[in-house]
Length: 110
Image (cartoon, rainbow, N blue to C red; front, side, top):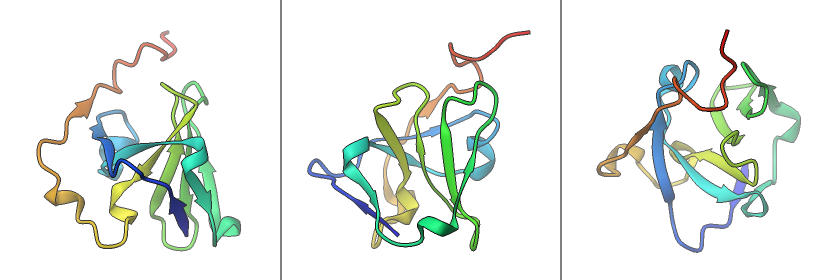
């Protein structure tokens, strides 16, 4: 279980079209590293990294839900799954933009 400090509410919600994000379909919003705390289930969290191995994507090994990730574009922030917020329906957030993760400037090019 995550505890988030969100004094400004849901900040910068967005989708991403990179290979992992477009498949998980989550809306992620931003929080500083100090604004996210794991209060229960640390032992069930698994880490997934790919490509540049900079971003750290976490998911629950019991239910498979993506919970949060430490951003590649801003390592001082976590992106968290808005769908994990109690009482929030991410589909009710209007006009959620999509970030171009397919052509991210930090990607390794062959």
